[in-house]
Image (tube, rainbow, N blue to C red):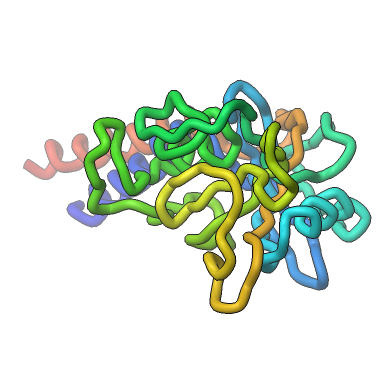
Length: 244
């Protein structure tokens, strides 16, 4: 009986997590002979986007921009039967950042610094994955900072990634970037940040698209699974009363 209760509790815990999740793996894409998850982010600053769970080796900004833009012809999509995707962007791209005058801060209201969620990577890092930056919103140091939670991602790296947005007053290699090791947004990636003798930062591809859930495919809804979990717990309690 105790085992039934434990199993029921585990099911309920997992299903609650599913109901709250905003990152959903909707299939894979084959790239260079390997399958990588396609992760649907249903509300990144109000937009529906899909992330390719692959980190391109460090390179300068223009090379990463070109890599992302040419990805479509190199991918074979394996979308799960429960989903269909209508791409809004014509091609894959690097994540976007809201441009503006460079101003560093810690409360999330500036263009550079910590706790900024208006960029696509910042929103992913802080809001979807619930990570902490080096500084909190009161400019105090957090103990458990960096990319400690990766959610559905398997290939995110605790390092610096280029944004696809150039700063309004900057050269290409001073484009906006996001460093997941400290949750910091800024312009440019210092030489060697992503490894000794390496210039530039990692590349992460994203694409805007609307995802439809195919209701004809028999896949349990989170709410249905929640009811199942409650049912198992209720049965466990009933059996305990009968035995008593």
